[in-house]
Length: 325
Image 1: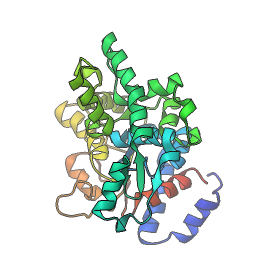
Image 2: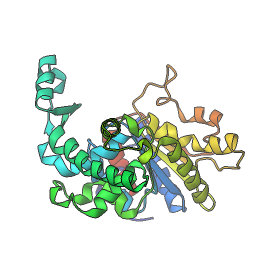
Image 3: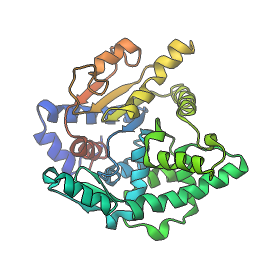
Image 4: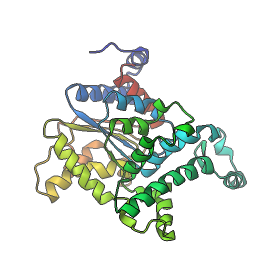
């Protein structure tokens, strides 16, 4: 076992009970899974990219602790927004005190608020729209089709955005993923800002063929192929940050293969979720891991963990522990 760093030692010494202990259990389970040759998928819900999770997630990717990412369209694009427009973001620590008039003033300044952080529309969203619109139109003319994350990979590899970087590029998780050519699944991409922009581009006629950007069903097919390939020789685990479609979509690949395709598919080999969702009222996000046994996603013996806490606090600590920092 590698020597623990100061952060890991602090966690190990102080985090002994309740959600703190669950954090340690999930982190140690993650390390054991990967150290035994297992692969890991991380799912990103919420606004984790705007929370700058790339500060810790990018290093996890570089050190081969992550082998697949499932994320919302918002998390895909917001990492790049932060990469090119970080200096123009504004933090509003007193956001709870804002009046409707204060919110309207932010709107008039084109500052889109995510809790305590405002994303600048012109410097972030419109700058990236211009870059990706050119890629959409070029692919459309050539009759080529790519997934949303592949369009981003193409833009990053061309290097045209480098002059606009406003953070250390090592802190961008999408840039790290691009360098590793990491597979990414983006279910429900249409819900994101760029998804809306793509719909507008199709309506304007800038993009003639709506299927130039590949869809969620194709993502599921690609995920199924990936899952079958990886699990021939390895176990694939799932580390879920938050809830929603980023986690609900990919976990279903196992029962889909088994029940709908009639293919013998291994269950997920590890499952952990960081969630603050109430475990009641039919909430998928708040469902405890054992419920997933009934759906043929996890097994009785699958290592299962749930940390009921704030992912912006918990995820970087678990990543630090996994990396022996």
